[in-house]
Image (cartoon, rainbow, N blue to C red; front, side, top):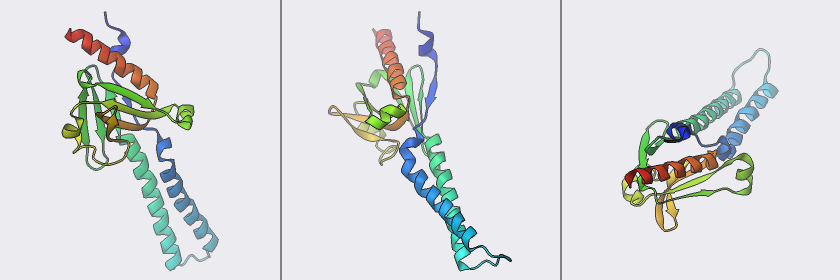
Length: 181
């Protein structure tokens, strides 16, 4: 009889904390421009070059905040019964499936502050990952390629609930291996 928890499909997102610098930068642009517009506002409001520049900076701040938030929400890992599905991308979508029976190692890295917030990096060792998923995760970001103990790995950065993710993955690996024997 299988544990009922093992049949649950869960979806996880990276933590917004990993993008704190971007949030702060765009908020400074946004709030700073609003303050400058209010400071230089006169009645009647006659648009001049400086107010147009401030409005453009406000627009860049709003669009930047929206893009950061959408990119965080559009990067997901879904823990299914037989595999992990990784989705990444805002304008173009990359999807990769990692079967539990192909995972050789899983490693969690948490710095002190990450542990306080319950976030961390998950490294999933997958032999042959370099050839099969380089085209999907070639750059830096919430999901990219790296090395774990000499094996190629998919690295999921700044994800929430990393210990829960690790527990579920290890349980599903164990179940997969017991079913194949």
